[in-house]
Image (cartoon, rainbow, N blue to C red; front, top):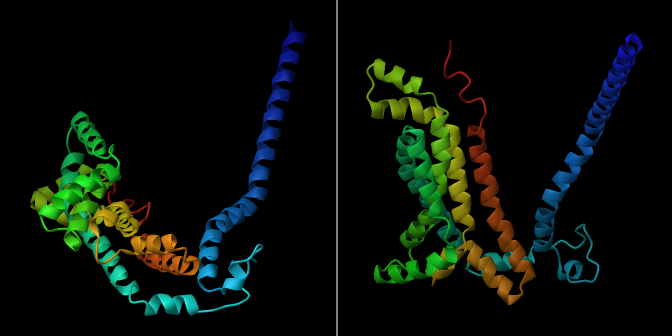
Amino acid sequence: MKATTETQKKSVKLHNEKDQGKKDFLDSFIKVAFVPMLIISILAMLSPIYILIKVSISKPVDVLTQHPTFLIHNFTGEHWIKVLQSGLLFPALSKSFIVATATAIVAIILATPASYVISRLPKKTKYIIVLALFFTRMFPNVGIALPISVKFIRWNLIDTHAGLILAHLIEQLPFITWILVGTFEVIPQDLEKSAMIDGASRIRALWSVILPNAAPGLAVAAMYVWLNSWNEFTYALYLSLSTNTLPLQIYYYVNRGGFFQTATYATILMIPVLIVTYALQRYIRSDYLGGAIKG
């Protein structure tokens, strides 16, 4: 009996040593492979951007060949000059920027109070409302864009900034409301209760206490809406006649087969995205609520 017990102990010890050896090997592999995998991932993400920029500043001899090189050998600004002198860039750039910015601002103004109220509702009611919001996104944009364009013709909103902003809000409001509901849920209600005990009204508590703590979520929501509106194509195709947005302008050159102008417009389309993301990323901090409550 004693020999059997000792054998079992040795078996368990041997099994534990094997498990520990596997764990040590896995940890060592992760430590060794982490940097190369990170570098490969970064290169995989940056390569399309580099190729886009390369095409926009390379001569045709470097691109329109059977075996194009990865590096830039014959630099040229001809494609950028053509785009800048075409007279089509700045109207499209202006329209895209105005529509995206206005859509983000209006969406934040409308969704913030609604999301705050929804976040303070009972759990079952909150769940039903969020599901109802997502139900509106079950229908494809193409199926919605056509009846909207017919209605906007009657309202004289075709080819206007206001019409495109309203169309973008249809798509963006459910998602931004969902994002902000989650943001307000993680903010302790004790904060607003403490402010109200100190004499602040509910509106004052929302403005002075809740919204500052919700800044990361608001930044994420604003960034999400702005980027989606900036890149939106379907509604712009139905609702734009005389002045295109930048995605429509890219589509125009793709149809014409203009590789270099397409790459140039796509590079220009990417630049504001980088600027907006960099400007708002400072608000996205996981420890923003770390010092909100003490004790």
